[in-house]
Image 1 (cartoon, rainbow, N blue to C red):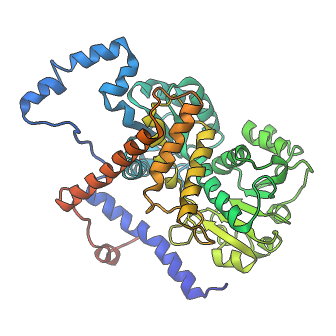
Image 2 (image 1 turned 120 degrees about the vertical axis):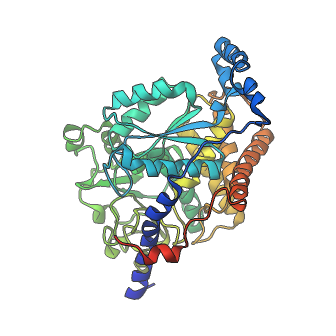
Image 3 (image 1 turned 60 degrees about the horizontal axis):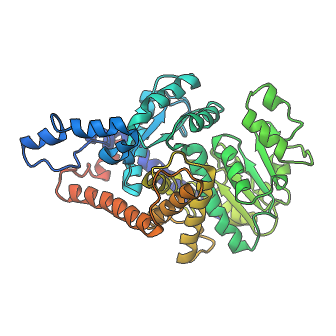
Length: 460
C-alpha cells in the first residue's frame, strides 16, 4: 500500500486543524466546565433544606459513619483529575497552569462518556511525597482520583504509594488507561491473525509510563515475560543493563529488565523486531521513528500498534506495505484508534458504582476483555479491532466488568447485582449525554464561531 505526498500533506493539515481552532474556542467559552445544581430549587426556602439549618442533619449522620458521605453527598460520583503538568502529552513539562486546559478536557470526557463528575486540580508541588500528602488531604471529598500527565519515574512511585495509603480508587491514566486499551485491541488482533497471547513475541518500544504498565497488564492477561523485549533510547532492556538502576534510579524499569529478555539480547529496535509477532510503540512521533525495513523483519501476520501523536512512529500504509497485517494508531482519522478515552470513563463508572476502595490491574484486564467482547460482537476485522468513542454502549459494559471485578476482589463497599449495575450505568451515562444535548438545543450552551471563520483568521 502506498500513498502520495499530496495525501500525506492533507493528513498532516487535518491533524493540525484542531490546534488552529482550539485557542479561539477555549477563549469563546472561557474554559470548558461549570458547576450546576442537581437538586430542585423551587424557591428560596429550599435552601433551608439544602443549606442551613436543614443541612445539619445529614452532617450528623455522616459524622457517625463517614461512609454515609457516599449516600448524602455527591462524593459517590466525584473524581479529582490531578496533575502537576510535568509530562503533558506532546508538550513536556509545561507546569500546572498550562496543563489546566488538558485536565478540563479530561473532565468533560469523564462526564460525557462515563457520567462522572470530574474536577481538574492542577498542583504546584513537584516533590512526590508532597503530592501524596495532597491526595490524602482531598480524599474525603472524592470517590476516586485520576492522576494525569506526571513525569516518570515519579508517576510510578505516586501511584504505588497512593494505592496503599488511600481508601478510594487511585488511577494513573497514562499507565493503566493506556494499558487497558492496548490489551483490548491486542486481544482481538490476535484472534484475527490466529495467534495466542501466551505464545507471541511482543516488542514494546518506549519504556515510559504507558509501556511500563502495558507490559505488566499484558503479563497479567497471559503474555509471557520471556517472550517480551522492551526497548528504550539506549537499546533492549536486559539484566545486563545496569545503567537502568544505577543512572536512572527507576526500579520499575529495572524489574522489567530482569523479568524479560532471558537470552540477554543486545541491540536496538531493529534487532528486537526480528521475528516479532507484535510491536507496541509508545515512543516519539514519527513518521520515521520506526522504519519499514524493521517491520519487514517481523513474523508473518504481524500486529503493529504505533500510538505516538500527532504522527505515529510509522505511517500505517508504510507499515502494511512492509508486511504488517493489522495496524493501530493513536489517531481518530485512521482505523483502530488506541485511545485512553475508551477506558477510564467506563472503568471509573464501575468502581464508583460499587464505592470501591481501590482500582487494580485485574480490573483493567476485566475492562479490556469487555471492550474486546463488545467489538467482537459487532464484528471484528483488520480495520475494527476495538470500539470507537461513538460506540457509547461499550462504556456500561466496561463499567459492569470493573464493578464485578471489584466485588470479586473484596474491595467494593456495596454489592449490587450485575443487572442493577448495568441499568445504573446506562441510566447515568445516557442522562449525562442527554443533559448536554438539551443545554445545547436550548442555547444555554451556545455554538462556537464557525470553523471557516476561525481558520481564515488563524495566526500561529
